[in-house]
Amino acid sequence: NEIAYIKLADFFHATERASLVEALLRRGLRPYDFAFDSTNVPAASHLFAVHYLYEQRDPAEYFAHAAESRKEYGSLCAEVGFDPAQRVFDWLGGAMQVPVRIASQGPLLYSHVIARDLAASSRLHTDFAPSIPSHWSISAITAQYSWNVYLTDPESGGECVLYHRLWQPEDDQHLIPGTYAHDARLVADAERVAIGVHPGDLVLFNCRNYHSVRQSAAPRITLSGHIGLTLDQQLIAWG
Image (cartoon, rainbow, N blue to C red; front, side):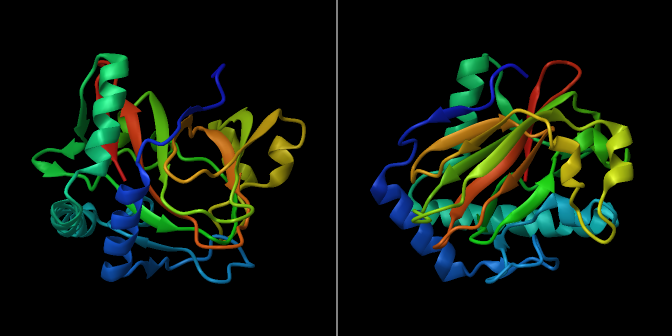
């Protein structure tokens, strides 16, 4: 946890970004069923199965949706002529000399990528699979990256604010009731960095660290997902 984040500039070039945004908007990004923030206008929206939304639900429901999402993602890749998530996985796998594979639970595969428009802000939170119910296979990972490729220019704002403060189990007593967010007092004295949004850039960070997103002036469309390190030093991906 010594490096705040990794950024690769121009990971997707302008033509690829334009093709992806056009294909995503044609399919339609769907509003989340909860507010990322009380001031969300417009509401955050997404495409493909988001595991977070199913953490407390029947896994069968999630994996049915995940299968549909993988099929829809395959259609998108065929339309744009390349696989954006696989490009990320190939780069990271090459850098770490360990291939990235899609997370599985028995014979069932997780959905491994999320498209999201988050023009409004998101509140202070973490993403760390060991904090979720243990019947999910991904809960056994030991470390976790979040990856994001920025597809649009939000004009102003949209920075991800990353805090040098790792989630700990006892922190959940500071969850704000009825939300996914933690009380901001947890990071009041923490070192922080604001990660700017530049179209085409790939950004990876340790998402066990607390983070939030500032509101932006225009659509902030990304492709993103999670990559976890397993006990046997394998890399697995989910969305």
